[in-house]
Image (tube, rainbow, N blue to C red):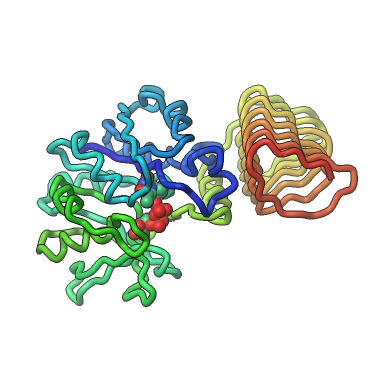
Length: 354
Ligand code: DAU
C-alpha cells in the first residue's frame, strides 16, 4: 500500500504562525505535527509516501523531510497550485498511486492509535474505501457519518448545520483507485473545494462498499492554537523521560521530563513534567517550567514561569511573567523588568521588551 500526506492549504486559523511556514510543520512536543502522520503510516508498513505541498513556504517541508531517508521512508513531493480541496489534492496523486491501494493522512491530524490493523483489514478486503470515525461533541465542524440500524454507512456529509450523528469522519482515509474517477467528476462544494466527504458519498450512492472503524483513542484536528496546546499536552503525557543535558545542583524536577543534549538546567530551576526541552538550551535563574510545556532547541529561559505552552527554537525569555496557554514562535525575545501576567500568540522573530 502507498501513503499520501496532505501538507498544503493556507492554515488561516493558525495565523500568524502560518505566514512563515505551513501549519503542519508547527511543532507539537518538539516535532512537526505532520510527522505524527508519517510515523503512523510507517509503523503500519507504508514506506512509499507522497506529500502534497503548496504555497510559497512549501520548500520548508522539503527541507525538513528531504527524500525521506532520515525517516525510514521514500518521499515523493506532489505540488498543488492552490488548495482546491482534499479530493483535488488526492486526485493529483493518481500517477503516484498507480494501481495500489493507499492511505491518506491529513497533515494536521494527530491520532494516538496504531492504524496497522485498519491497514491490514483494508489490504485484505474488497471495499472501495475504509474510514475512521470518532465521537465528538462538535460534529458540525467535521465530516459526519450517518449509520443505518444495521450499522452500515448510509451518508457522509461535510460540516452539516444539523449533524445526523456525533460521529466525525477523521482525517485518515483508506482508498482504492476507484476514487479517481469519482474525483474527476466531482463538483466544488459551498466552500469552493472538492470535498473528500462528497467523493465518499458518491461511492456510497453508487453502491460501492465503505467500511469503517470507530476509534476511541485521542484524535485532534489541530485547527486552532488551543487545539495545538491540547495536543501538546496529550503527546507529552505519552513520552518516556530522558535526560541528555547537564543538571546543576538544587534543581527540582517532578514528573516526566525530556531534556536534549547540550542543554543546561541551572541552579534554582523547577521543572514540573511533563515538559520537553530541546538541545543546547540554557534554563536558568528563577525559571519554573511546566506542566505540559515544550521548549525547542537553542532557547534561553530565565526568571519566568511557563506552563501549558509551546516555545519554539531560538527564543529568549527573561521577563518575570507567568506565561500560560501560549504559543511563542521561532526566535522570539521577551524581556521585561516589570512583570505582569499575559497570554501570547506570537509569530516568528518578535522582540517584546515590557
Ligand atoms: O480533520 C478531519 C476533517 O478534515 C474531516 O472531518 C473533514 O471531513 C475534512 O473535510 C477535513 O476538514 P477541514 O476543514 O479540517 O480540512 P482542512 O481545510 O483543514 O484541510 C485538511 C488538511 O489538508 C490540512 O492539513 C490542509 C490540507 N489541505 C487542504 C486543502 C483544502 C491540502 O493539502 N490541500 C487542500 O486543497
